[in-house]
View 1 (spheres, rainbow, N blue to C red):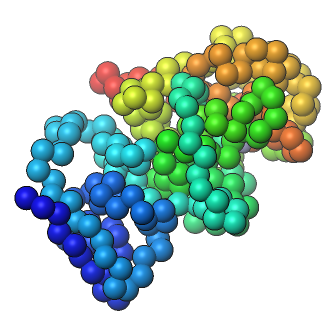
View 2 (cartoon, rainbow, N blue to C red):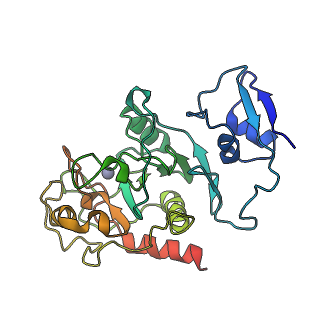
Length: 282
Ligand SMILES: [Zn+2]
């Protein structure tokens, strides 16, 4: 069986075309590698509709499938593909796997406003999560914006980066971070689903805090945190990064100038990790 060519009609989206043909958006994108931004297709453009014969991997799994670094769904949450381009439309930077994930939060209250501010800054994480939804902004084979280029960070070492919308934890001055916190369920559950997925599936980020001394209450790390010289960042620059695998938070990641922000604050990270474990081993 050969692939079918579909000409885009007015008002059609890639997601709708995928639906009509009984395939996932990820499968459609995999068959059309020339499409770099799934939101920018034009009327009359020719799209390849792949035959799905023999390509439905992971049948019966609820974890979702990954194609060319893009997820179609994850533990029941649909993943929307909405690329954030690099400034000037430069190509994505390919990465090698580091078995590191980085958790962030954004100042914006809603998913769309968070997405918009990241897009306006060309500052793309791999995932933006909120309101029970997941937007994937970069394939997992490409660099996220979490890491800057200075030593010991290299641009191509960027790990899986998640931005959680709704900023309830940290603050840039340390004053709003006195309480341990957990995201609300509409942010927590999709985030945990991504973490569980990334524990396997060729991404293999271990479900652990990279360093046992890094307590959720941050008692190991005196304020102010938003600086280059906080104790976790000193340790990271001295060798913890990128050798320690697991889920990091922004407060620990080196090479974050000029703001050195620490948005997650006293996040109950170990509870999130435990919830991801439960998803894998119910
Ligand atoms: Zn951050």
